[in-house]
Length: 271
Image (tube, rainbow, N blue to C red; front, top):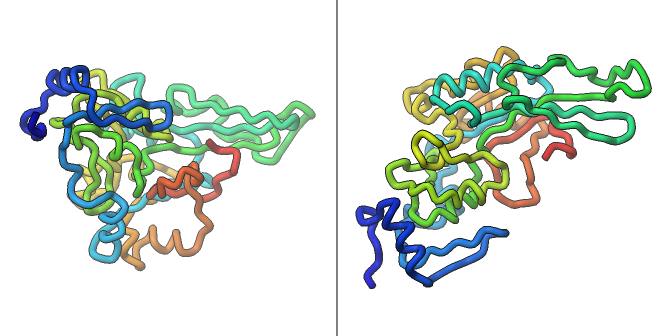
């Protein structure tokens, strides 16, 4: 049987092919992936090589979240939903509230993704008022990490997940077959299957705005300037100066995915 080309593949054909063939298979964590005969291109060289080649040759975008500034107002979540038409019950970005108690318990809360803020918009930061009072707390906005070594691209059997020259990870909705492999493979929970389109969906850093010279909607809407987006290959850019003068961390660094979304003030308890 000859290899299948992108034009040949429809959602039905993909599912039928996977069901009928027993060719190449592999395990990604607990996820079983069968890519039998689906020899679709992954846009040239391996992602790591392509990402490294991008650095220094043009614009490479990055994103910084300053958790010391986030006030948990939810403006970013609401702006993202409005800008990108995110269905109710799903989020491309969300905010988590971490609260630490004297007995060592850490409570993580994110009602409706933090879209409507939190009951306590200003947690008792290092100000306990009693033995049971929380010791401290903070907010952590979450979004796609646009990893350099991204597992979501690696597991996509039809090449629908890809990375732009600027380092932005996107989904080709015309090619996506909605198998959900990328949703399961993302270790950050950043992807979901859009119930309206039947395809994988995620934060794009508002790529449609960025290519017009605009900032992502969540960045524009943040009243605390806790979200910073820009060209990290320009040493004079705001984000480059922030990265050069602050201690930054990434989520789940032990996974080795090399996220482009970085954090200021991230505690080790944040998952």
